[in-house]
Image 1 (spheres, rainbow, N blue to C red):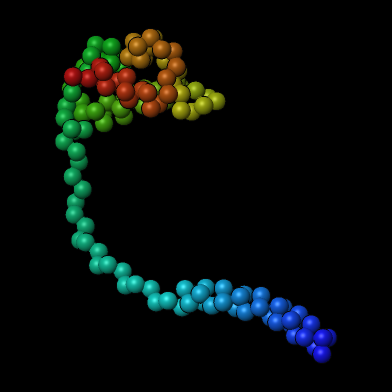
Image 2 (image 1 turned 120 degrees about the horizontal axis):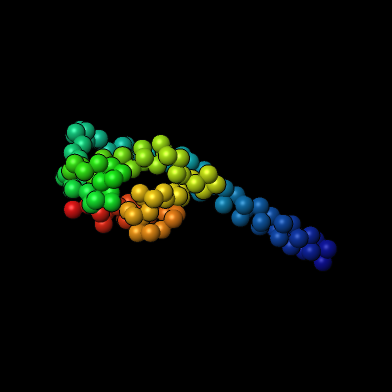
Length: 130
């Protein structure tokens, strides 16, 4: 009898983890079988309006005018012309393309710095626009 009880305990102990594994598997199956919610109806697309602050014509300072021209331009056009000047004169750093090496004209715009990151460039240029 003692042996029979020992084997029952051993088998019940072994069976318990199997039941736990079955319980863990059941919620996963329920998650997969759960129905998906219907997608919300999409709004009709409207034409995108440009921000008026970006489109406002600003007058560049004398230092910036030497690079982009003296006529009033929107901020977006100033940045485009500045990048055209940088690419034309090959002023982008060869190892780190995010840096711009300033020549004599750009050094005045960049506040005397010889190298500026492209993110700092827009901040420094905004000081030259009125």
